[in-house]
Image (cartoon, rainbow, N blue to C red; front, top):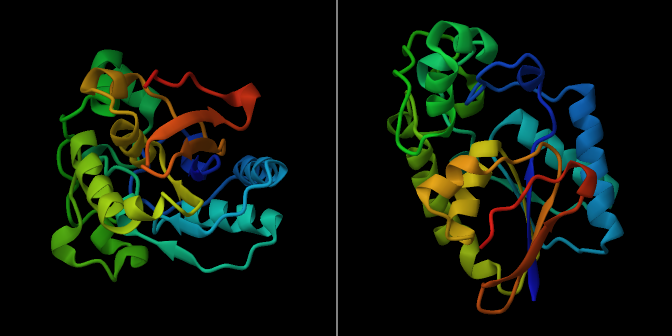
Length: 237
């Protein structure tokens, strides 16, 4: 038996401002830092020893993981993978979600946020929010950096990474991944065998560890959110 713990980063500055963030590298709010510390305390209270830590390349996920590890007093090396980054929202990046609902209509914005294979228009490469203009991503080959993504695109890169680097380690290691709403939704689609309709309904709360209990055959025994007061409904698997 082993554990896979998925943690969406704590509230970010652009979460608070209701902006489409994607690959823009914003940090946590004070509330987000509190959420991260609480996540660490919840993991600690369950007496779970983490063997492997991973985060995306993005500051909000890295700092969430840093704060969790401080609570756990764990000095193990943390690994980073750009494939765990948030979905790239293309031309929506940096725009306010409420304003876009007024401009485009709630239905269209919901489609952009939750549909399986709909991509927003590409983000202009000259835009300062484009990943090629952000220092965080300078080590990623430019041909791998997207201009826009659907959830399907995000799923494919997340899943390729998970299968190559982590899946075989889940049978005998406790693994914690600090990532993002859409990269965690992508993992949940695979782990819980969700269809495209189910994944569109799955919400991932910030800073609330999702504890997944796996057997030696890497099959899910059970799962739960550790912060029950802020738990979202899990799609039945």
